[in-house]
Length: 465
Ligand SMILES: [Zn+2]
Image 1 (tube, rainbow, N blue to C red):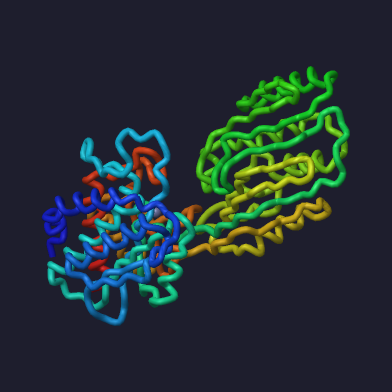
Image 2 (cartoon, protein in one colour):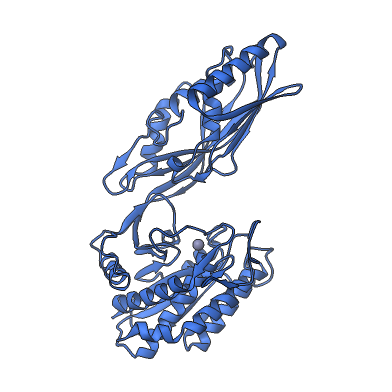
């Protein structure tokens, strides 16, 4: 079957339909009748289901929460899971974010790579299968979620109505195959301050970071400092900066501000960032403070967290052979004179569970009066490397790209594959390509879009034959 030739024949349509879908601003909006995530996502869902119908597929809309389109017959179902919603465009775009303009053989716009381009590439992959008259034994179903970016309510609603596919891939991450994803926990470390500080340096508040799953690039402490201690504070900071090379500065008005600048990064890769909160706390821990609850918390942070990425000193330094080390990221701090809350995002190795992580930490937190406020948890997912799904997808990926070296990987991030069992992430970003999802100037190159469509066609065929 010459699937690649069929896909080449759809090139103009693949480009045009991607552009049209990008022009629909499908950011989550206010809920309306039949539109649980607002008008934008609903319009994108209707557009895509209409297109699927024109291509000759059977479609169904699940009350605006999600939709699907299918071809073929059989008891078993091969699924493709894509999403049609996007994150807000943000600022600083070179080209309008909802125009789908082409420059330099790249389609620009919010959603081009995440996840509208891959959704269209998958639809045309199904068209190629259909037109080839290839003999299949399974149904092929593409499922369109409408709020992947804002809570997964759409896909969860869908999965209550429809049995999940027997095997599935989601083109919403990167190539080659992601066959395992670490467990993800988000929690706050909370401490109430009873024993207040009376020292010459009083920490009034500390604020830093925007989200638990990001390495914070900024943190500011406001200090009330007695006149005679100001020189000491300035000298201490100068010495600290000399020693560490951290980007920190001091501003003096009525109170003193200590400003710490780090480098932002995704919470699954703290090594590639620089944690502004940890830097600041590390400095505060060098100061001569009295024995108060605030200074006890700072000492705890310095001793048990410090500048570490792997949770070792706080009792959860776990590691396994499938997915490597546990990743520990402090993303947000909010401290005032009454209370402190430190938001942490942990990504733990596949072979462990949430309880082991919490138990390890609780031992280290004993007698410190620090509470753990659990906020969110996603279990690890894992499909064996020699499972049919992984093996077939890897084979197809290698045959189309000629990339013989790449192997199936595990990651610390969470992909849409977690919505189902027996699902893995597969594309659309090729190794070595710049990751522009959720950023300004997001694009998909037309060559990569076409290559995706060819890979998906062969993948679907291999899984469904
Ligand atoms: Zn996505």
